[in-house]
Length: 571
Image 1 (cartoon, rainbow, N blue to C red):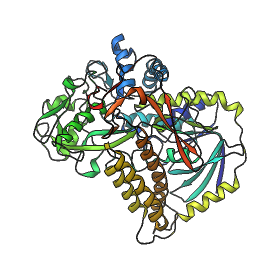
Image 2 (image 1 turned 135 degrees about the vertical axis):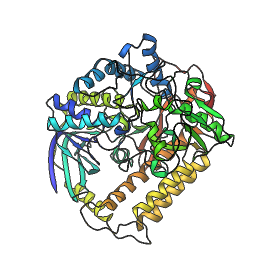
Image 3 (image 1 turned 45 degrees about the vertical axis):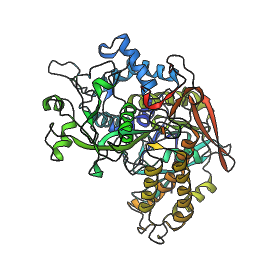
Image 4 (image 1 turned 90 degrees about the vertical axis):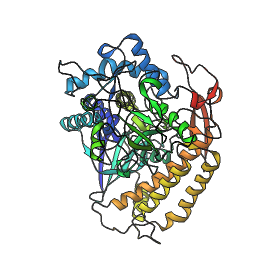
C-alpha cells in the first residue's frame, strides 16, 4: 500500500477538478488529482455541446446579458439556485473565463471573415470548435495544462472512502488503482469532491461507465448533507436505437450561424416542438422540450422510450454541416439527411441536486470536505459554471488552509476499508454478478423513478432497493480474481455507491410534493412556490435520515406566481 501526502486531494478530473487544481497550483498550494478514468478524458465535461456567452461578451446587449442571467436562474435551475452566486459567476465568465480560454489557445469557431460564429437569439452561444463537441477540445486543453504544471495525477484510480481525522474532519482518501490492484492512501489537509454528475443510474442514461454516483455516496457516508437529490434532468432527443447510441442527441436548440434548428414530431407526424416558435428565450433548455414531450405521451402520441422523431428536414444540409456534428449520426444510420427524421427517446442526463455547500466557499457540512462542479447541489449544468466552482473552491481553501492540519492516517479505518473491498472479490453465488445487480438497479430506476413519478411507484422502488440490499448483495461476487484491470471488482464497488445514492434519490423524490421543471409528480402536478421554492435538504439522523427545507433568497428574479400546473410553466 502506498501512502501519499499533499495539501489538497481533488477527486475528479473534469472541468471543476482541473480548474481547482490549476488555481491552487498558482497559489503555491500542492494539489493531487485522483480520477476514476483519465483526467480530461472521461465523465460529463467532455460532453459539453457548446459554450453560452455570458454578460456583454461578443456584442451582447444589456438585454441579452440580462436574458442570459434569467435563463440560468429560471430555465436552467427552476429558481433552486443561489442568485448571488449566479451573479458572481456571470461576471467571472464575462471578465476572466472566455478571455483566459482564448489566451490559452482554445479555438472558437470563426467564419471566413474571421468573426466568431454565434447562435442567434436572446441567448447566444459559441462552439469550440464544432457545436455538439465543444467539451473535447476544452478538456484536452485542461489536461495539457495539468501535465505542463506538473500536478500529480492518480488516473484509473477509484476513491472508495473518505478518511476522517480524530476531530471528525475529512483528512484524506482511500483509493484503488483498478489497473494494478494497488491500494493508495492520500493524506491531505483538505479534500475537494469534483466527481461530476451521477447520471448512469437508469436503463437509458447519457453518462460514461465511470458515473455511478461515487461522490454523492462517499460524501453521504462521511456525514455530509445533500440537497435536491430528486431533481434529475433528462435528454429528450437521444437516438432511440441502437441502445449504444443513447448519448447521440438531436438538439432542437439554435444552431451556430443559423436561424433554424431541429424540430420534433409525434407518431402521427404532427410537429410538437419547434425552437423558434415554442421557446420564448430562443434557447431550448431541456425542461421546455421535456414538458412538450410529456403532453404527447399523455395524449398517446409518443412514449419516453420512443415513438417520436427529430430531425433537420426543415434545413439545408450545408446549413447543418457548416458548424455542427449533427448530420453525422443520420448518415451513419443510413438515413437520408436531412430528409429523414430519426426516432428518439429520453435518457437520464444529469442530476441538478447533490452535496449541500456554502456557495461562497464551497465548504460542505463536514469540515475539510469541499465540493466543486456537478456533484454540488447549488447550481445545475454548463461547463463554465463548473469551472467557476473550481475557482471558488480554490479561493475558499486558500483562505481556510492555515486552519487545516495534516494528521496521521487512521489505521483502523484503513484496515476496515481493505476488508470491505476484499470481501467484494468473493466468488458469486447463484450467478449474482455486479453487472446483474447494476441492471436490476437501472431497471427499477427507469420503471419507477423515471420521468413521471408517483408515491406508489416510489415506495415500491424503495422496497426494491431493500430487496437488493437484503437478497442480492450477500450473493454478489466476481469471477475474475486477478488484481490487474479487474473491471468486475470496480463494478462491485460501483454497485454499493449506486444503491446508497438511489435510495436517497427515491426518498428525496417522495419528500418534494410538487412538480418543478423536469421533476414531474403525477400525484402533485402543480409547481408550488409557496411551499416548495426551497432547498430539499437531507441529513443523517441517528440510524435514519431527516429532511429540512431552506427557502431561497430571490434578489434578482422571482417566479411571478404562487401555484401553477407545471406543464404550463414556461420554465
